[in-house]
Amino acid sequence: MAGWYDPFLPTQLADFLKIKSEAKPLVAKNTRLIIGPWAHARTVTFPNGYTPRNYRLESLAPTIPWFDEHLLDNLKSEAPVQIYVMGKNIWRQEKEFPLARTIYTKYYLHSNSVLNLTPQNTEIPDTYIYNPLNPVPSAGGTMLGPRAGIEKQNDIENRNYVLNYTTASLQEDIEVTGPIRLILYVSTTAPSTDFTAKLVDVYPNGSAYNVSEGIIRRQYTPKQPTQIEIELWATSQVFFKGHKIRLEVSSSNYPRFDRNPNTGRPIATETNPVEAKQVIYHEQKAPSYLVLPIILSNASD
Image (cartoon, rainbow, N blue to C red):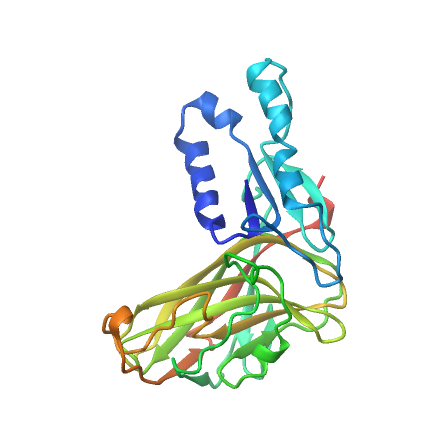
């Protein structure tokens, strides 16, 4: 049992896939996955004020039929996967996860804060300065405790060290269900630094709310363009017609993730952090793009 805003979701999904592929057939067949609209043991409130049924009740609900099946031989034909589709706020049964009918779709990053389906030509890269002493503050997300969940992101997006890439207003509903990847071509002046990503749902009134997030920490050859891949938390979210899909890119999300001091020395004992100039490339030979798992509405039956 997992939650879309639970920090343990990636490892829970990995466990499920490992059991399905490597366990004894009977064990694999009878393993179930439930992913709800929760943080870690917490009910999440959605931007429109709607709150799903309490996490405790939802987590207890599957136990009675499970005991009936395994202790009373009262066999059930429940789907192996049950997911909560946010936006529509409905439960849906599936045969597997990720969904076999997923259409993995590339959304390319462009200059002028544009995110769309068109590959890049020659474009000027985007730059920002990451100062570990002035990190991007966490607002909601996959944390433990009461700060987890969904929060408005507009104040964060207005900072000059947060890059935003946004689609045009959607002409139809788009369901994003499954794992999310971001391929970036980057360079940095630091020997070690972080790059972060956040998927955001932008409402028609401009209000922006976090859906999924990710980070990568690694070493670099300073000023040398490098391809990196950031894995964002899996999700199931419907972006409605008239909304926009936004990608935030930066180098910190604190205190959700500890700050990288950019020195390459041990982080826990570093007392002299330095600034780093970060560059995001998006051109034909360095095409940065977001991969979204799209589920077509006419294929959901």
